[in-house]
Amino acid sequence: MEKIKVIHISSASSSHSVEDYEEDIYRAWNSKVAYQIKKFYPHIEIESWTIERKYKKEETKFKENLKFRIFPTIFSKRHGIEISTDILRALKKEQKEAIEEDKKLIIHLHEHHTWQSYLILLLAKNKKNIKIISSHHGGRNPLGNLKKYKKLIGFLPGILLMQVLEKLLFKKVDIFYSESEEENNYLKKISKQTEIKFQTMGIEDEYFDKEQKDSARKKLGLDKNKKYLLFLGRVKTTKGIRELLEAMEKIKEDGVELLIVGGGADYNFFKDYSEDKKMKNVKFLGPVYGDKKLLYLSACDCLILPSYTESCPVSIMEAIARNLPIIATNVGGIPTMIEENREGIIIKPKSVKDITDAICKILKWEKKDIRKYAERYRWKNIIDNTIEDYKR
Image (cartoon, rainbow, N blue to C red; front, side, top):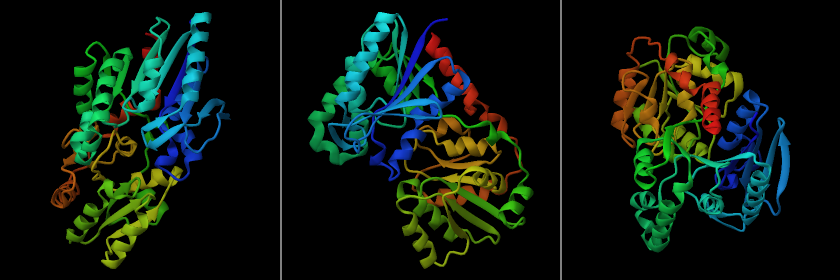
């Protein structure tokens, strides 16, 4: 049997985005995929590597029999603009061993629009037994960032340099896993010979278990006669929480309630906002995990995600698997996940009217069987496809 070693590499510090960065290292996308490969294909040698600005030296740790290597950074301006020379030295050693031992080495990058990924690609050897796969996590190409954030014009020389680097280095990637049509189109232009596939994270089999709505509501103490809308995720402005609350102020129908499940930087701000407005049709429930999260997905009538920006939200996969229709914005990879009037309704971002109209419309839907459309997100299917790509 062919010897394969796979290294999943995350090129951004968790501490830039979350407080509990130590735990986030083990639940990041690269780690989750590595766990699942270890679960379904235990014979494959696999490691999860990450960089973290809070670390002063490299550390090796083990969790659920998976090897983690965490490397310090020498430069860390913000998420994606970071450099670790230690990870480059370690990767150079891995490539040398793979060549000497005639072993296939798969370097699986997680997000390619980062400085660290540029350096890794620059270092990557063009050998038949060293292959590179890169998963898109919602990042934008340099000129795409400039187009969205005009204030970056002062960094134009650096942005142009990054754009040139992507045009030169992305040719080294054997397969891109993309999450949006916008990214697909960009990659087709910049790296015409590279294969591009739609690929996301996955969800566990438990999300496909059936739980009756009345049963779930009884366990949660919810009113069986009400209509419940569910927001599930980090509570922050860019998730469209303000517009969602403003829409709920316009919903005059009795018996319609919004449940906001999750924590985040703006949780207290929006909770105080709803209390100041005396909004009786909104409840902030804080973070919910495990079986209780599954119950809320079964108990509610609709998932709402009015984000300004997204990649391919796992909450949408989870909701579809629980047969819950979706209201979500036309951003990132969401249009590839939701077909209008099949899994849900697509709306414009930052539109209170769109949210209000979509709520009124979706609550009148007849019960549909949308669970079957979640099969492509089952972890086993995703991992099987990924392993086929590794073998090729």
